[in-house]
Figure 1 (spheres, rainbow, N blue to C red):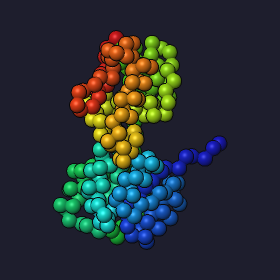
Figure 2: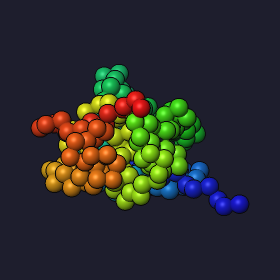
Figure 3: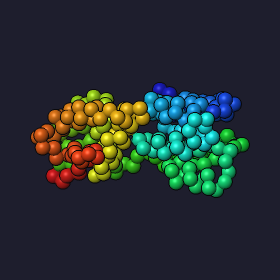
Length: 232
């Protein structure tokens, strides 16, 4: 039997000692750990590493932790556990309202931290009923990572599939150009709208009956795109 794949964790904290402690603790419990000492570096690491869980300090040298949290939530749904010396209710409420999944104050128990990480990760497990998306002749199986049109599998590149998955996860909702670019290409690509035009064109060629008159991937002029869920 093969070994279980380690959970990818990102620690964003400017204290070297805290990062070292968290690395030792997390690696001893099956995590693969990446680190960042600033908010900006943390955002870049999050985009590149796509962590399954993030431990975030609020007192960073360049960006406030809540600002980092807000930017993360524009394109990532990875569970975020805030780890901070700030123990005021106002700080906790602000972090939780802006997308944190949990809040632990320093000093902390490593046992409690690990337990809270497990809980946060359980809450983001995909539900079976959402594993397959159907819209007319288009079907996307997120578990098998298979896209079909009229029952025939369509081969997509990794980027094309990432786009389709993002649209499926937000089907029926308008996704702005910035949201899509940050999710698929990372936070430093939010102005590269030509990427979207090119890749949306590819998706329509592969998945629409008439790419010139798309029925699934709809343009919202000046805003972004929407995936329409059609009945057969």
